[in-house]
Structure formats: C-alpha cells, structure tokens
Image 1 (cartoon, rainbow over the protein chains, first blue to last red):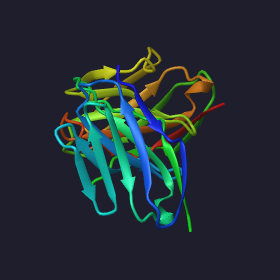
Image 2 (image 1 turned 90 degrees about the vertical axis):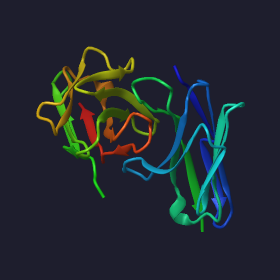
Image 3 (image 1 turned 135 degrees about the vertical axis):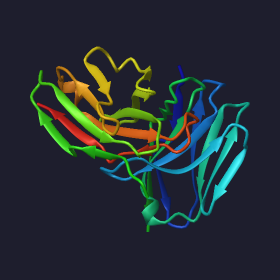
Length: 113
Length: 114
C-alpha cells in the first residue's frame, strides 16, 4: 500500500520567515495530495491540495509543489505568522476504489513572534 | 458552510464494552469514512463506505469494528469489545465524489477506554 513520509517532525521559525515541509510517497499511481492543518484538539482542516497533473499551486501565502518523478511534494508557507503555528499533515490518495487518504506523520510548526 | 457532525464529542468506556460513534455526513456527499488518531500521532484510515457497503478497509479495521448507515443520514462506527489501545480520536469524513477532493472531517469523538 501507499506509504507517506514527512519531514521535519518539528519546525521552528521566526515570524516573517518561510517554512517548508516535505513529503515523499511510495505509490506512483497516487493522484491527489492534500495538506491539512490541525490545531490542538481540533479536526484536520484542508489548506491546499494538488492533483498529479499539476506541478505547483499557490493560494496567498501557501503553495504546494509536486515532483511526480521523484514522488515528493512540499508545502511552502511564506511570511509566517504566529497563527500558522499548528501541526501540518500531508496526505496522498492512492488510485484505488476506496478513496482513502494515507497521511504523513505530521510536522509541528512553531512560529515565534 | 455544511459540516460533518459527530456525537458524542467525548466517550469514556470500560474495556470490553461496546461503543457506537455517530456521524452525520454532509447531505449530498456519497462517500463516508472513519479515521482515527492516537494522541500525538498521525491520522490513520479505518474504512470507507460507498453505496451502502464498505469500499475499503485498513488492517486496523478488524472484526471488532463495523460500520452502518442505518437511516440514510447517520453513519456509525461500532467497536464491539473495546481495548485500551482503541483509545484515540475518531474522525468521520465525507466527500461528494471519489476523487479525493472535498474531504470534510467532523470535529471528532475522543474515545477513552479505561
């Protein structure tokens, strides 16, 4: 089955700096890659996603890049703010009938004011 | 904005007891899911449900687990005989179609097995 690795597990940045979180996946047939933000005790919330036919997608301060050949995708957050502090999860959707998502291990992002 | 609703928000149960976690997916969604998250760990897929049957299940979803859509609106997860290691946050989710997009998670049920 699909396996998603995520790095780093923790990331501390100064407010205003950029943050980059990287994920690799194993199943070359995976075709959908969402990123979720989870605040303490809350549900995962989708912040951005990308499909396998696209190399990059941007939404204001966040962007995601996908390299299908290398089977990795990354989340980029620019001009970080304290409210960006949370755990971020990447995920991949294998190409199967179940429409399941396989999640990475998560990155705890801390933005210091 | 439509939401996936889960009840209860927190359930404490004795080991060996049966629990039923309830979810009301978004009304025009067709796919339903259960995921769990052990404290401090990643979100793990349990089961997906489409057209009144299980589409896929993970190896976590063993014979102790079952899902049901009893009345066209609720989607339930039953754990027959709970174990300590079943303690986790359980998230229900739904999507309108089977292309991965539009995953909406509920607010979760924190299950504590004592």
